[in-house]
Image 1: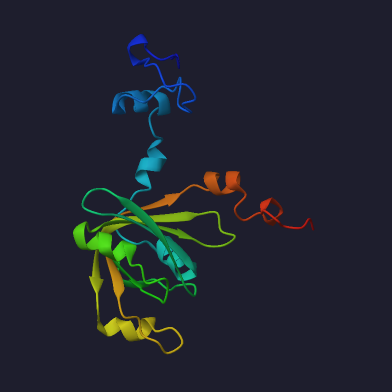
Image 2: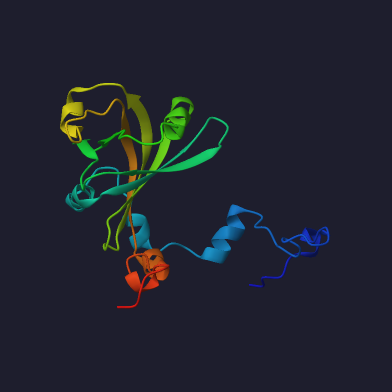
Length: 192
């Protein structure tokens, strides 16, 4: 397959345009042609209930990124963190994340009020596996399990409850390429 742009895709760009000569992807079919067919193992890894391996990762995870978008599709990704296991498992298809003190912007919460779809990405320092959970969220102002999510005696005032649609364990390729857990690649790190 050639990477050359079809003649009809060529559009003159203004001088100095950083995208001059860029060739945009035209369709899902073209994307599939470029990427190829996913390996069956990759497709088979998707599941909709937490497994023992997922529960182990959640129990050890001190960090999660929460991706949301508003009704117009404007996106936000916000970090969440706490002691390992800060995410509470309510059952095999439901999670609760406490709202711990932060900047008070509430971007994720504002988005969820108009669009409940969320994506969660859990990372554990030093562990190469990335746990992705997609689902639909709602915001609670109280529930009996809030007491169990208290930090230093302080109950959360809000919790994000996620009804799980899809769970996926990512391979470690991106973490390895980034050197995320390799201190010698960290900016400003002194050599050992």
